[in-house]
Figure 1 (cartoon, helix red, strand yellow):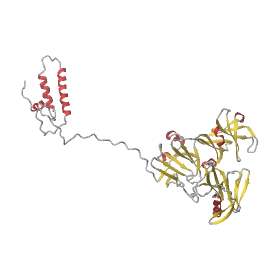
Figure 2 (figure 1 turned 90 degrees about the vertical axis):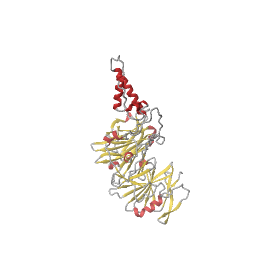
Figure 3 (figure 1 turned 30 degrees about the horizontal axis):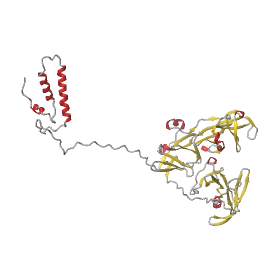
Figure 4 (figure 1 turned 180 degrees about the horizontal axis):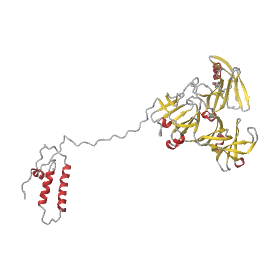
Length: 489
């Protein structure tokens, strides 16, 4: 047997310390073990097992002790090594928690990309609109139970009904006449569709509409505490007299000329856990829409709200709000400063105190005016000599005897408002609602104001004036409406 021991043997006797266990060392160990095996070994399994076990022990020992540099002298055999106190083991690295998603930086302008609802509703989310074309069906009037009849000027009678006495689902239908308007009715009606719940029978309204620049009748109904329906119907020459519905919206709706191109768009607003807004408009007679929550990066849990008085869309984030308005003539939203709630109020208002006359201040001139109570409403106004009362079958209006101007008090129901837009000459007033232009030359102007005496007593004031007379008559008209009074008796 070879009794000569290699240099590394002395090192290994006291532990290899932090020296490397090299390939020559492993081979020498294997040779020594092989030479010392007893004669009874018949198989190489014991050899392989022993070599493997020894190698594992050596490798494990080396892994426990960090390697030193080759030049470092080994510790003497049997000597206990002391850790270097000047080189402590590194502490675990702290990981920073993920940062919360920050709200997007508000852009000065947002270019709107309108989508085709037929291709987008399924991919972008659930929206409250239906755009399939539905022609009204003819049914026997005797098959329904009529609950209310609404007469629409020059457009016939419309019925609100249920299908049986236990039904609470409310339907709308149109009376069919035998030979055009004014002729005797037939025994059938055209069924238009569901308009809400029977509980809200008296809330149903049918009004004229110019949505998308085309004449419609808009049927508005209520189906619950935060549930409304809107159905726009029109008539076509191909099917004369048959109501046709091609847009229905189960959300609150406002018809507004947002981009001031003369054609009203449809603003849809929803409010549940968050506020949502979509805008619908037509391109080459095709209805398209844009989701403003997506466009303004204000999706859940953020919100978008629409203010009809200022035509402003406000994206609401956790730390701030950002307001936008349509750029005139373009599908672009421009950032605007928040609208102050305390704008100048035109209407002084108040409760009628019994005074039969006051003096109006018209551009610094005092003009005598006498009290007139509207017989059909809980409000009255002071009229100068140049404005007189005109009585109609369904109400009163107050007409100027000089030039072309009229003042009307109307029910404070947003569903009865026409399509309005804000005009710069009146937008400084917080109680100004908007303006509508009439006539082939758009030379008749209706300015709408809202007076709220309290939450239960409100009225719209419509001021009609020819654009030719507005310069000389407006100061007087505004002075009259600013002194409206609440008079319950």
